[in-house]
Length: 306
Image 1 (tube, helix red, strand yellow):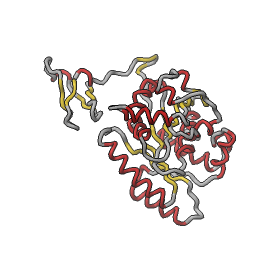
Image 2: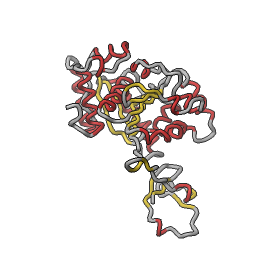
Image 3: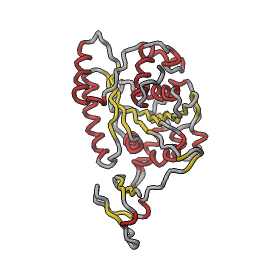
Image 4: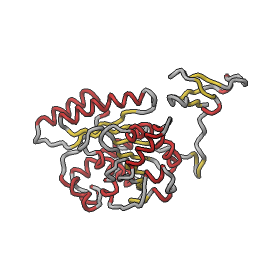
């Protein structure tokens, strides 16, 4: 059976037959803390028609620096996965609420209202496209940050506890984040299991990546399952010589985590004004081609869209 430490979330695969009947407490080999054994046993997935419930891959699109294409990436990755046939939930944790704008939808509520239980999941989650649902952000998230700050303990798990019941509905949950490092960003990193970092090909953005990875490492001490999975170079412009130098350096340092770059493409900037994704606005553009390539890498299927 699987025992999950409630302190550091480390999973231990234990032979149940070797546990004495009178043992009620256990100690984690990872963090050294004690916990009640019975409460830490991982529950099996709920059965659904055709087999076990799926467990969504939860991917955070994040970097402390702004202007690197986080929302553009989150929206077009989520939409591309939906077009590829997956059930996808896009969560916007930015107070600007730009994911809704990019998709041309106008929800009455969203993430904040779900956390505060003003709305049920069925009311807060809106259908944005076929197989793509949206849990919107917006100005109300400022209030959610205050709610998290006021918690005496466990504030960093606020989002994880709210989103967990939704996992079995989806194949992918994509989380868009705001710039900076605040309680909501920390919550996202306690929710997601994979991290995708967009990095514009400029020196300041790479410096932001280095600083972000230091902060990420501080979270990984408590969440061993949190993994930096993808680094996505954005705004590639071959006319700028230094951009290729930076791209080569990213490959040298981060190797296979580096995705094919997204080329600078004005269509990516124009599409949100019409509430359209790049696949709808300019399906033959470089931007659409590059985000299809990202979908193929994330899904692990090079044949998608071929």
